[in-house]
Image 1 (cartoon, helix red, strand yellow):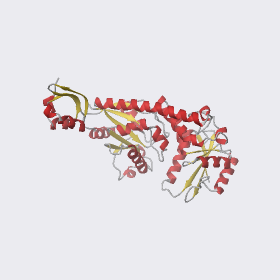
Image 2 (cartoon, one colour):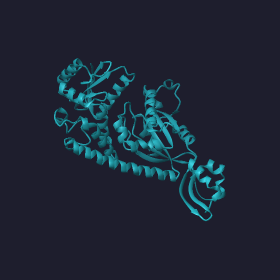
Image 3 (cartoon, one colour):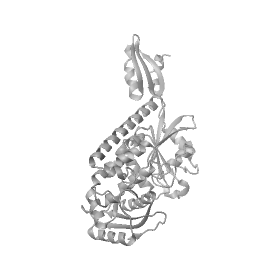
Image 4 (tube, helix red, strand yellow):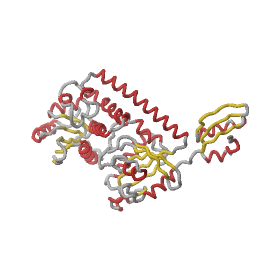
Amino acid sequence: MENITNQTSPTRVLLISLDTGEPDFEISLSELKELSKTAGAEVFGVMTQKRASPEPATCIGSGRLEEAKEFCADNEIDLIIFDGELSPVQLRNIEKATDTRTIDRTMLILDIFAQRAQTSEGKLQVELAQLRYMLPRLTGKGIEMSRLGGGIGTRGPGETKLETDRRHIRRRIESLSEKLDEVEQRRTRMRERRKRDGVVTAAVVGYTNAGKSTLLNRLTDAGVLAEDKLFATLDPTARALILPSGAQVLLVDTVGFIRRLPHHLIKAFRSTLGEAKEADIIIHLCDGSDPEFRSQLEVSTKLLDELGAGDKPTVTVINKCDLCDPSALLGTSGVRISALTGYGLESLLSAIEDAMPSKPIRMKLLLPFDKLSLAAQIRETGDILSEEYTADGLLVDALADRITAARYELDKYIVS
């Protein structure tokens, strides 16, 4: 048993983690401590157990569960947090056995998101994820219901919503899904408009607390909240950046990634995370001062692949280089910067320019009937905004990249 004392929060918690031999066990547990502190908890104790697999009924064994019960009683523990995802049965059995309210890693992250959401969209996304996750875990009685109304793991939908019947909750889920579908459609239209206008977008992605908001503030004076906490920024921010060449790129800040990011969040935040999928460039930021930055890069890269953004032009950026030993970065490629001090930003801007796609040219063309195949060539690499058949040929309003324009000598067909 490890004892940890933090006098800044009245909520006393016991962390429990099951070691089944996964290589990131210690890292995940360390992250759980930081997540707990971010949520406003006093991490009073940590308990671990090695097992080949989780106990189906209680996750940990009966002996360890009895120790947890005694520790909670002796130390006035308010909350148990498990590093992993508990089934509804496990959750209820653990609470019954320990007489202590219990949540898992997913519920903790959802609680932090509920604290951080500022925009109406962010609040909708958090509420949807929470309701979907908690619906099968509601029994209408017992500790999980009697202790709602305050504390970590209960923020978001609120007591009144969670105590209504399942039918009402399902209706609420359906309503939230419809509202978020509308948000996603608006985002899609906005992205399409950016594309038509030739706007290049760059999504700033990376592990939570890597310094994404600090970088955005440094480059664009965006005024985004930047704290030394996990998930300090939840709602996306987009700001224009003028590069040294005069070219403009739209930087989009995104929610931070984390190990074992709940699929409920990926699904609920699809419109926000879609910014990475639809971006022209990925700026992949990592915290070079963190001993685990290489594994964090791997986690973020895997999540980008899952989002369908793994094949995007990517600029890897190693941040907080002012805080780390240069020898620790040997063998790792990427632009070295400090978003806090401004070190390396010129190199970063150059790397972004190198990754920029060829900016499309907007042109109105009159294609003769024997050259209609050019329309298909434009569609492959650009975009046709409108087209109209006339007596002299096909009149098109199009966005075409310079290579296509030069290859097919499109300037011959330009009309005023």
